[in-house]
Length: 243
Image 1 (cartoon, rainbow, N blue to C red):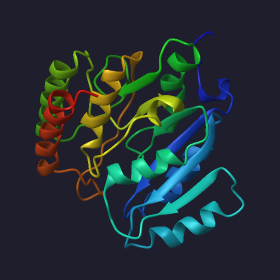
Image 2: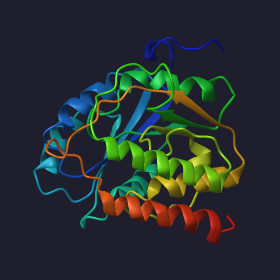
Image 3: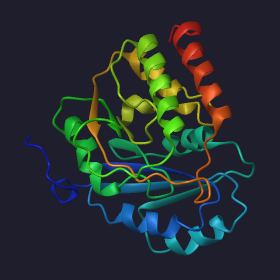
């Protein structure tokens, strides 16, 4: 298979799993953009007990759109818990994690799908720090330092050479991600899934993606406490668990 040049070159094969918590301001646009991508066969949206009207907004978006699967948590549990729920509902052959904002560009799905569709990869990470990825919004220096530290520690534990362990855009063959028992409820999902994928000895690729980060005023939710949790998760899932 030759490398796809755009999403238009790829037939429907993808479930996008979108965890949502209080994203009413951006949700309609994100859903529109995701569904406009030809590879998207299914969009699973898990509302993690939003309080800003997100659930009411989702109802008309799903009306007459059979590709959308809506799920709601009655109690807020965290991003990891929402992903666990969403992944269990995935039916397409490939699964990607999609945040409910436009920090990441769904127009770049083809970059993540190509290694899998070419038969070269089972899991693909989209890296914000891999060369040639295009424009990046300039934001928080210490966030980038924290990301580099966590990625380095994760790499030391997994013996992978990733450049961006904390990336949202992780893509999996469905049979790979659905056989992994996920435990983390919040942002610990990233080091947990990286550790568990590494232990499976599957083929992992990394591709360059663009990134347009949000400020906290614009809705960014991850904080320093999540960084400390990520450190614990790197140790827990690499050193305390055999599988």
